[in-house]
Amino acid sequence: MNTLIALYTISHKEIHRFLRIWPQTLLPPAISTSLYFLIFGKLIGDRVGSINGVGYMDYIVPGVILMSVISHAYSNVASSFYAAKFQSHVEELLVAPVSSWVILVGYVSAGVLRGLMVGSVVAIISLFFTELQVYNLTIILVTAFFTAILFSLAGFINAIFANNFDDIALIPNFILTPLNYLGGVFYSVSMLPEIWQHISLANPILYMINSFRYGFLGISDISVELALGRVLGFIVLLTLICLNLLQKGTGIRD
Image (cartoon, rainbow, N blue to C red):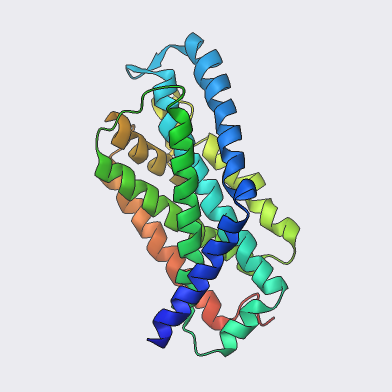
């Protein structure tokens, strides 16, 4: 019972935090993605035509939605957990009778919820530009959920090793953003030269975006089973890393 109370308290606090400042956490994605759809989907899309038999606007919508899920799930946990470190809130949790997995799940659950909420906002905005197709709703929901979990965990690791607020922006700016844009959001990997197709397979975001796109359009550059399997494998790996770092007190007790 105490474990459930602790889990509820942490997750409720984190969820309430980003909902309280919704103009900063939920509104900006609506504006930025509208520009994506207008510039890439309409202005450029009319000249590109179609990819794999699908209109360019319809092709990029799933990728833009998932890109929003990735960035906001990541940033929510990274910024919140580092702020807790900075203000010494985490030290109170570590000395309390609270398991490491409770702390992790509490923060990750809020990141997942914010990522999925932002993704839903972006999906609604896309309806003003195109008509969303749904080929396999289960694949859509599973991919979005797995992706939000994975990048919430990644944001948690970033926060553990961050020494200042600049370190929180370092990974998204220099690693996450390039991987997003090179993950097939705006193009099919089959359009690349063969050598770059092989290099692209090292990008984990490629698997998530293709799986998510398959859920909407029924097309994918790679096997959906392989994509979901690799994402699940990354989730297990990052979960073990996070728990190990918490138990050691890395970046917190130093």
